[in-house]
Image (cartoon, rainbow, N blue to C red):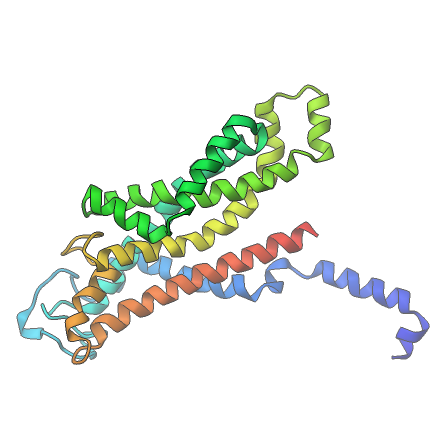
Amino acid sequence: MSKINIDAKNTIDISLSNNKKTPLLKRSMSINVGAVMVSIMLVFAIFPNLIATHNPTDIDFGAMLQAPSSEHYFGTDNYGRDIFSRVVYSTRIDLTIGVIATIVPLIVGTILGLLAGYYGRWIDTILMRTLDVFMAFPFMVLVIAIVAVLGPGINNVYIAIWLVGWKYYARLVRSKVLVIKNSEYIQAAKVLGYSDARIILRHILPNAISSAIVFAASDVVMCMLAAASLSFLGLGVQPPTPEWGSIIADGRAYISTAWWITAFPGLFLVIAGTGFSLFGDGLSDLIRTKGR
């Protein structure tokens, strides 16, 4: 206490220098917890054949609706299939859908947002009116409608999410570009005669893309939930391929007698969603802290 009174300025300087030396990763508990949860899901997705105890599609009518045990960790379904193995193999499918369904809208939306925000005029007008039309309908309503028209299947799930998901990235990037393009260093680049392509790619994109990447980390959750919801309705991944949503749908009729059929795939869906959400929140905190 006496040191603070006598030499407050030095004390403040010391505390500030210590904060600067603190690693950013240590300041964000969210990104650490999220990274661990996502890593566990990735291990399940990459090595399902090493973790699963049974073939996920093998039918055994002699082992129908068995409760969790040492032989079947998560029990069995109405066809005698091992729920643990089906949940493990589903992790690869759902994570793949979540990542691939996010990457394409990220790229397309970023490009459209850059062009509309930088050039403005008729390009911006067309994009904003198109966004208004898409924003008038909820995400899941549009996705279900598109898949219903195209037909069930994983490829049509990708198409539906791609057609709808780009709007969030375009709007986000456009708003960032509108602020960045009026910055002094962008005006200086124009005075120096830099081409539009160089200004957009080397000066605007690196500063505008961070928010889109943070949103993408959380958007993986939305795409996974969309895929699981479509499979639950019979419009997504088709049997006998295991998928969290379809496994939950199979267990609806046995919810009171065989709760494990729906509980464990639902739990994995919650863990994966929570992991990506925490990782996205932590990544957002890191970017804001680093930018100060």
